[in-house]
Picture 1: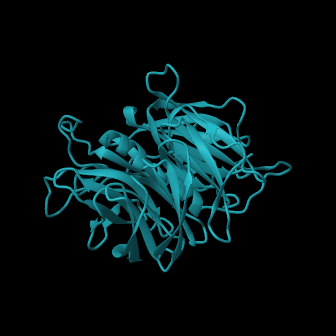
Picture 2 (picture 1 turned 60 degrees about the vertical axis):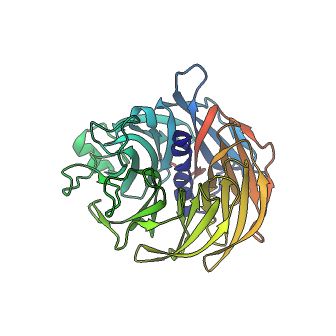
Length: 409
């Protein structure tokens, strides 16, 4: 169960980033609002080699249709997370069993073109997030030769610079823009990663579950649970201009029993954490990156992912065991329940469309499909989209979206 949770819980951070970068973009001469990218852990007969399904979304009905030539190979085994670049021209896919990040250029028709593959510093990457300058990845185990599932150690987070065309060309002339440079060095450990550990209990095994950014990339948050003694935490870092990380005063912050995902609201004043173990969502006030608990609200069983709409008024939580979405209104960081909406079986990732801020998607791990909903901006309620759910390959794990027409021609 722990490995499935690790695989699923980080997935939300990719969709949250797409939401925060939302803009009102409509396809020229078409009814396509967005392209949605759904990673699947397994392709039929592939021995865990994954694929990426690509859907175009109708701007009037929300209906999802696979584009021609979809799905595309993920470039590795067991893809578990994905993120898009800030200019929506690049997709990064994390393949857990290969410890790799694969960079794809996104064509104007939504198609994917593989460009580069890099290895993560640690073992079993599980979550990824981006800003305009950096890509952040959380690894289940830090890069020590003794770490394994048989002898687990704490996880870590690494930072990769996202290079401009000129910077990439200085490394290799053929490299495109949005290529990743070598991971940033951490002089404190003489390595290229930042370990996750409790200062009071340095030998406890801290298992990360998700990574996300906030305040336009000024802060980085990693949710984790103590696999040795129990208890959940959020590790908070300030992101320096060179990509190095500085621990926020007071970090790590206690966060329930088994946090699965974190999202910051658009104002930057609050952050919300789903607690997979206690079936709740925790609201935190944010001050200079530090977190202080405001309230807790019940969710469904085993909440795995969360998004907040671009207005900050509504939040949606994917409950993996109940196979539904819980909708909430938000006021001063406090949640009020609006209702539950049925998805496919075991939703593990959730996201809102970045074009219209109107359509909601969940990747349903056991349902082998993607559910689509239309949100009501007046009251936050959801209506199942036409043709939902849409089929995907075996065990979809992550969802990300870009506005149609935003890619480089």
